[in-house]
Length: 281
Image (spheres, rainbow, N blue to C red):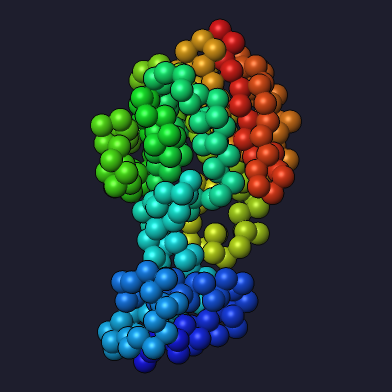
């Protein structure tokens, strides 16, 4: 079959499943199957696809039809204009999480070397994106998932950051090493009872430990705040992603644990997505 016919076939299958991105998904999945970029597909519609490539493509379409996220099928996701490896062991990087990177870079670029800690690093997208911008800084990412750290290390190697980034298998409760200028974190913050209401592509495929914030949604957030207070230098900064409607509650936890609330930042959807606070003592 030719490129044009396969894209139309795949797009039609996905559209029937109410997948809004059916056209671009079909294109990207065929791009993966034939190992050529999307531009090639769009400029070579009559290109003949081999039987093996066609079989691979239709298998990818079947997976996507059942709502497996595109990023897990093609094994990559763009974040901060960088390409990150991802698989089912890590949360897929979201555009709104770029808010943390944006604010750290805006505040500290050109201000010397920083020692940065990323709690719950997952794919490493936050820490590694920051280090690509802050050329003289160093970072440590921790995660309780060993499999997630394998992906983070691959991304570090891919982005030529092995000399400035290290990753440690440890949960937030047991990590007590070093002092830091900046702590960043995108902790799980969804209430346990709300997990079942998430889209099938999220609840059915992404790691629950990266989503479930306990009965209140604040369990891991509170742990991150308590740990950051212990590991940050005086006047060090904590940048943390939070869920919709959590700003007031998280602010209260921060103030009770020795932080001064500096600013709340909105994401692309005009939702408060990131809180920056400073350790007082």
